[in-house]
Length: 154
View 1: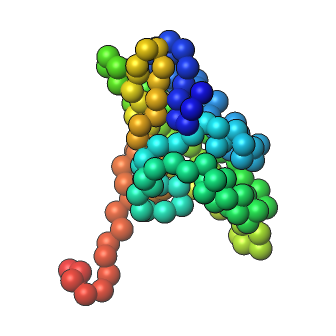
View 2 (view 1 turned 180 degrees about the vertical axis):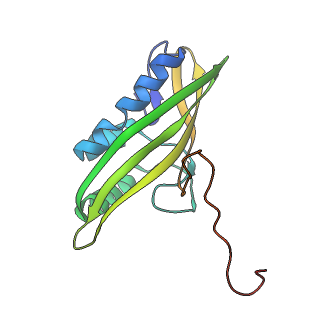
View 3 (view 1 turned 120 degrees about the vertical axis):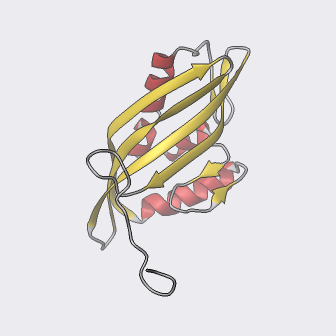
């Protein structure tokens, strides 16, 4: 299996959702080899607002090693996932909580929202785009407004 690919006839919503949930297990275990083997795709998110274009196993492995080395702990919890499948295209989306602590830093908990777009060819799903962001949300699921202060603000 190459980067970002899921084998088999997994066009059903439930299987895509379960595969998404299972994809977080290597992150919780700090299993960099499994994370890299799972691949990635172009997208936005994961510790930056900048686009991530292309997949380089060595660069990804180095980045993940440095990141895990900077942590005292890391855990993905409270995974919510859903999917929509239309022909040969699927979107898996949801949110999860990251509970972590950088060495010497305070504990942190953030709610992450994600969406992954897959394309199916010959019963093989390939991850083609991904997005992750961290925003403050109210209990009703809407963004918490953050008024801008300074020049140009009302």
